[in-house]
Image 1 (cartoon, rainbow over the protein chains, first blue to last red):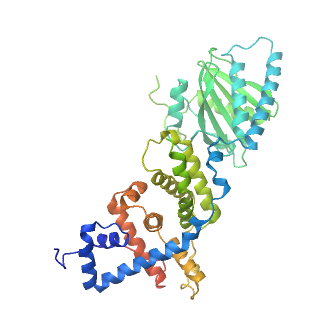
Image 2: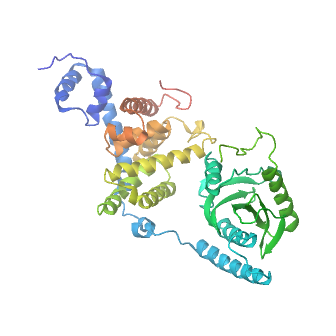
Image 3: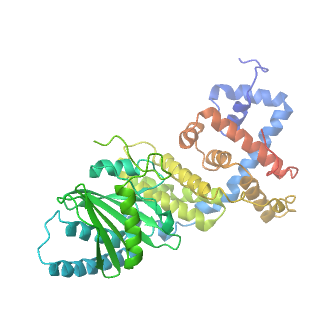
Length: 268
Length: 164
């Protein structure tokens, strides 16, 4: 037998309304309510609220489930027309590049600058068309650059391209010709996208070169056995300026504490 | 896990109801549900037993919170001018009142209240979904109830009064 006046907490009143009161307290709470009209009024009020809320939305749960929620369909990977279009563009680009590389005399070995550039342009074509998932890890996540640096095996310093209204969206890890490749995407307010691809190369060093592949083009160079490819719309002057800026920032890092998160961590 | 898909499927009507009450926008609500389902299906292999329903509510709650964060610069759900005294009688007026009362709540309080009252989850489940101790769920619930009452009583301008 519990004392009628044993204190009942506010939490217990809520639990009583929500049907979550332990059975052994129910009698106590009910007795309490019988002698405490203020609390009884609150309980009644909360019950009425709950009833109004449930009535308001009951119909939604009773509607037939719309076809868009067909799980079998949702489980399938997205193959929108956009993806198909991107694949077609990619196939065309590969064709163009294959032709282009065929002309370029010697067959490029797997780690040649040409092979890296071809990979970079393919990735560029494929991912700039992606609306929803252009990057795997967004630039907002601090581990983006350390992670990709580690995978590629060098300290990547991603350039600040604000001068060209380009903001780093993020990046992803890709297979490169002879090892992992880091792929970064930049975007300007009008939605134009530039990408920077970095992967290990067997060459130690090359000059900055331009390569056009149809609607897109790339500027590439190799430094310390890492190949870098800056890809964007086929506008040689602009691409050259952007690549030059990227090159200078990536190869000649400004003093520490620069505004952009230049990565110089642990590394090897 | 053979029960996974059927469990997800069975939860869809309730998820739609919850999303609708959270957003008051049928289109947006269904988008949230769809995103929730896609995510759940994508992580199906990560799911080793446990309560599918509760997990789905967790995803939806987080997605909605992300959405609100991205809108954070926008003013609250309703303008203050909108907050005239609750409309005169009639069932429609009553529906609008409860919608507005819910919209006047702080997001975490609204979420807690809806999960308990509308979706019938236990305090413990709600605590897990919101990632807070049960005591916090209780105080969110209590504040939500006080706020709704004062809103429906027509006296208080929710945007101006902080319910402590």
